[in-house]
Structures are given as C-alpha cells and as structure tokens.
Image 1 (cartoon, rainbow, N blue to C red):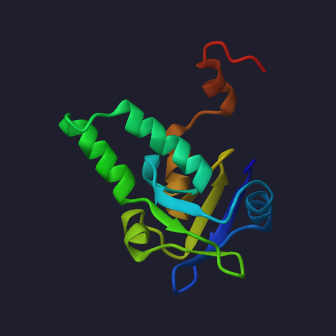
Image 2: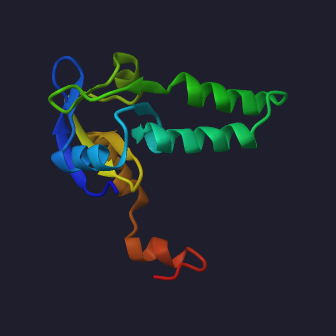
Length: 148
C-alpha cells in the first residue's frame, strides 16, 4: 500500500521523481501502466491501472448516458485521465495541461492514499490542512461503525 507524505520537486520539464518506497510498491504489486488524472480537493491522483479501472467501472455503472449530469461526470473523469509510465529513472511526466489545472509549479507534496498517490501543489496542500483544521481523532469519531 502507498502511505506517507513526501515533499518533492518538479523539474523544468514537468517530471517528478517518485519516492523509492512508492516505486517499490508499484514494482511489487502492479504492472507498469499508470493513470494520472484530476482528483478531488484540487489535486491530481496517480493510480495503478488496475485501481483506476475499478473506479472507472464504478463510475460507468452508476451513471447514465441519458442524463446530462452523468455525461458531464463521465466526460470530466475520462477526459482528464492520462495513461503513463515511469521512465528508467523512476520519474513521472506530468502533462502541462494537468499542471496548470492544479497549479503545480516547482514544489509538490505526494500523499500515499492506500491504493493511489495524490499529487498536490505544496501551497494548496498546506491551505487544505489549515482548512480542515481537525485532527484524525475528530474525523474518526464521525465515522459510524468504524472498528479499529
């Protein structure tokens, strides 16, 4: 599983070197295909193809082409999804369009989220943490039936 928080730097060409721990998980558990796409809370998400496919099937199964809102959901989800692979140095190329959409400049934060990796502009992530302003304990108390 992907976990942890890592501060990283985008190079001038928009490449991001994934932490060794994330590369290890990818190598051990998944094939080389990855999907990079826009995500909630103004970040990007990097998913192994198998994990992206699970989400894509859920979206297709829960939406209808006859409903305008559902078509918009599908368009936005699929149009912003880019298949990619890491290069030999373990770097990910983030397309300029996605960098602009999520205001990614030089400093980014990678967040391991179990079966996916979120990619945040550092300033946006700091703003997000301030905005939620609660502790894990406070959030967990709101989940009914969580048995740890």
